[in-house]
Length: 314
Image (cartoon, rainbow, N blue to C red; front, side, top):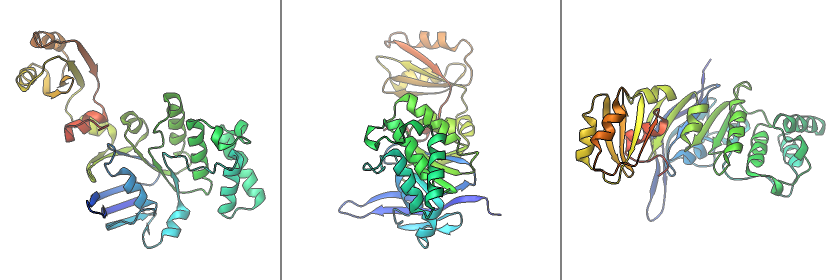
């Protein structure tokens, strides 16, 4: 049995105009059934266009995409019946209540009134919205609205769920609640393709992650493996008033340091050992206006910076 839920081969997309924009430039990806797959990258990297093609909303310029073995261009109606879509924007029907948004969506997919009422009640309970069933959409917070959008997206029991930056603009508490819901897709057997520019979100939720930039996939692997490729156990941000390549070279030569790079805030040090390193850094940066040191483990953002030389949120 084919275990690939989403197969993307040589995908390209150019938006025409006086200044044609090549949003996707030969994307190749495979998403396995049942996994949560994170597509990570800065704004404008090509994440939303990729989801748009996979969900039949955007026609590709070249390449091929199949969802559950079905070509998204050749058979868009069949693909729509198999997938659910959650966007970062509120697409709920504002003229309907929370209950009605789910109920009418059930009816739209051919369910009887009895079945639609039963499933609507179940989803309201599962997504902790039972007490808001009679509320109008306009009264919901961003977190509650996203919960309702996810509930609506799985009404027709899709096998694949596309989530395009679903936590954008949410407060931290709502974001954590949303992460629990996304992780809850695994027991349901739903494959999830999640686009995000939040590194922690991708790291915590995803079985595998692809980092995309300028319409190209830079790397694709498990988060732990991607971070291991840095060859560093510790990231030290050295905040300085004055930093230059000469100082970076001096720090890179210290025992335990793998690499030192000038940043807008000072110098970023990748270290494979912390043994007596901090005192050495303090001593080496005397006269350069040292005002802070922060020590963290490598993150997916660190991987991205190493690949592109720029911040993930650019």
